[in-house]
Length: 304
Image 1 (cartoon, rainbow, N blue to C red):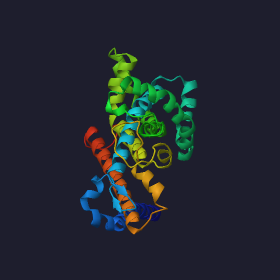
Image 2 (tube, one colour; image 1 turned 30 degrees about the vertical axis):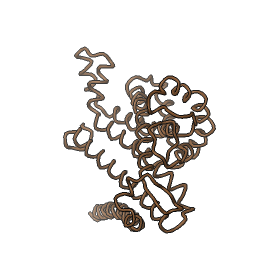
Image 3 (cartoon, rainbow, N blue to C red; image 1 turned 60 degrees about the horizontal axis):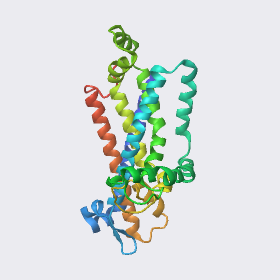
């Protein structure tokens, strides 16, 4: 039918357009970052020097800050998100399920700058006066908790990112768990499993591909987050094992310095950082698709 052919052609055009947009973004970033790549070569992503005055640029502090803050956020948010998803999908009474689900999803609608302001005026003072002194006193022998309690730093950025990705992971995980057929639960319960054992062995195992996809979507959001991280991480281009020390991320350095770039090489270096962020995001998403494909037995989707 004519309508079917129009729909097919329109769908194909939209799919091709999406590929063209992604390719054009990558091409633009590569083109604009070529001067920095030619000058600094393979040292650019692994050098720790970022000196706009001397026009010497290295992206390692930003790569390190992006990876550490995102992993820290994932470590904090993952158990909370899965706990919320399991509670809403398996345990919550009907009168609690809808309000709690609504409030959880509402967190995703809060603008990034609002998270940053809340973190700046509430989270940072709390970390500086209570949490970080406690960590320094009891765990200061570890390299992760050395240094003065600034409040602003990698720990603050990781916590605010954890709060921001929590609704993404929990909402998608809840949908995955709710999509698990009831006969999976009933079979486990009929064999004598407790409610938790049925959830752990039947529900979670059945939906592991979708849960893994939810985790990587949250990680992708954490990698690219800009405004809240810029306000809380301290914006110091240094590499430190301490989570209490200020740091920098790829997104935050672009937001901070792009408008005031001091010269063509500075601008090209920032575009190179953007290219690195783009490449990191693509690698993470490709890895997520591969892992989901492996976990789901080569089908790349949750089994039904």
